[in-house]
Amino acid sequence: MFLRLLFVLTFIPFLEIYFLIQINDSIGFPNTILLIMITGVLGAWLLRKQGHSILMEIQKNTQQNQMPSDAISKGFFIFIGGLLLLTPGILTDVIGLSLIFPLTQILWKKFFVGQWQQGIQSGSVQFYSSQNFGDQGPNPFEQQTRSSLEIDADVIDVTAKDSQTVGKKED
Image (tube, rainbow, N blue to C red):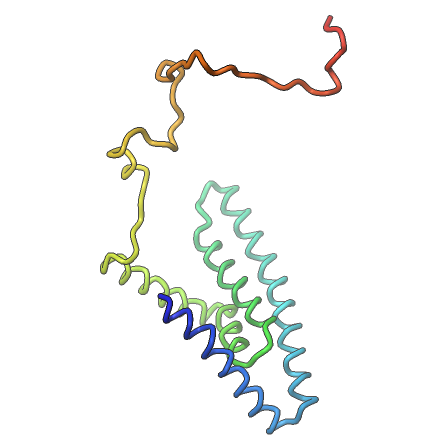
């Protein structure tokens, strides 16, 4: 994992600089700066436009008592794509645009699902559900009933009062 992260954090910036130099040599410095600014504005605009539609889709799904998992994954891709478009560079712009457009989003989703499945099969990715906690004692996510709670005599429970009502006589 460390080597992958090191690769991403060192090699990708070198590629970005190389591509920017090549584009600068081809179209000139002012046009290169203009290209970087246009992709940044495009990223912000697409992020805002697509993000709004994703929020509306999530709201619609939740109102219909449906899990908005597809909308959430789309929102994740759009968010990351928008951030990459805001980052100066050609490679990040290409990847960012591919994360935002629906047709290429499908390919990214298939890729990541395949990676997750491969990780699960190899054992490098593990998932835990509430059933896994049952073997290790009580489920921390379940509410305990009053009859199953133990009372500790050394604990004093204090309830705070609203500061506006303190000092006023109760009727």
